[in-house]
Amino acid sequence: MDSIEKKRFNREPVTLAVPLALQQLLTALVGATDALVLGRLTQESIAAVSLANQISFVLSLFVTTVTGAAGILIAQYWGKGDDKKARYCLCTAIRYVTLISALFFLAAFLWPEQLMRIFTTEEELITIGAGYLRIVSFSYLFNSISQCYLTAMKISGYASMSVWISAVTVVVDVTADIFLVYGFGSFQGLGANGSAYSTIAVEAIVLIWCLVWSVKTRRLAVQASDFAKVSKPLESDLWNIIPSMLASALSWGLSISMHSFLMGHMGTDATAAYSVVGVAQQLVQCLSHGFANGSGIMLGGLLGQNRLEEAKEYGGRFWTVSLFTGLVNVGLIGVVGPLVYNFYVLEPQAKAYLVGMLVMSAFYMFAYAYNTIFTCGVFPAGGDAKYDAVSVLLATWCFALPLALVGCFVLHLPVMAVYVLMCLDEIVKVPFLRWRYNKYIWLKNLTRE
Image (tube, rainbow, N blue to C red; front, side, top):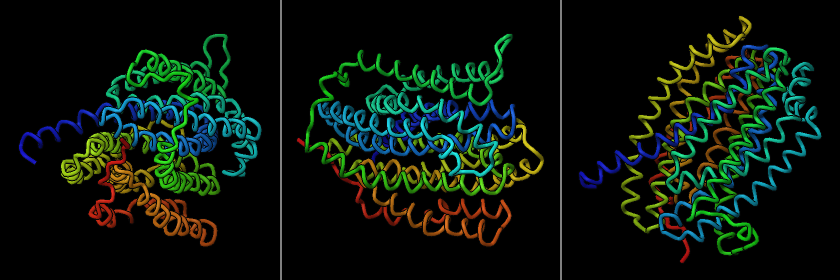
């Protein structure tokens, strides 16, 4: 790689990653707004809504799997200049996520109490969470479709548009949350249910904006007739990617739900502290996801053009990027931690748990950045999603989670000991990442003529 290429590399990841990270941050803020606003209401409200949102979190695992798999193919076909196939992949993703979100909507709307009992036995938390869940379930239908369009925006050079959408929705969400949760003037606040209504409004705005963008965009303009078309070769390519990505997403995502399950059975103080730490981590993770998405788009474009040697050189330079991002994550935890500690209204015991969890999060978030840029960016760009699935299965389900479950229900360890055991999954994956990279399984052109 000559000096010109090095300068281009140093500029391009930042050019891609910064708007993508900003968009991720704004999206995280929309998701965290409920917790931020409810944090000034009651400890029970934030704990209940956090547990209820585990349902939308599990839904997001399926949605991000479909959009991620479609995004890999869209990026390569976009780099190749084949708009027709790129558009078909987008239409296919929309079809799949619409069906999936409809199933989750029905479950959350019809059986919210039963879903809440999976995560807690506290009746007050079940009552608050079930009311919130039944209302917010309508937003699932809007959010899933809009995620397909937002993925296409980032790949096709409209990342700044996704940033503007997220910025507007943050303002709307915060304003609506404050008004609906606490009330204003003669309007009586709705408590936790108010944040559910504001989420529906925000997701509807995002979807409408995305649909308008689709109509105005020429190269990825989706027509109603496109949804009736079926291409068996492209469907086959998509399903070659989806199973591995879904296994990875479900393994990781369900482990996060298991973390909520563990904390939910260790009392309201532990649940509330874990909920606040989750907000801090969501905000800090954005930089890692920005660079991961940026690396995937960069490498996907190169691989789609069959520029394999250049892609290989670019991939090698992402090791430095991952280490830098990990160190930045540690610093961000040091900044965000005190802010959330002072903002939320928590009991003294919950505050003590929060401090310990934030300290452990610094180590966790360094390893998270190091792993994520490759397992969610570099590797999937060439269709290698299997490693992420296997590593999550072994590190999380065969190591960290069994230790945490035994610590909680058999040994009855303190809350902080169980939390440390939960966080070991990302850390134990670090030594094996380079070994997989050096196999160059990810260095593939996946497009069809």
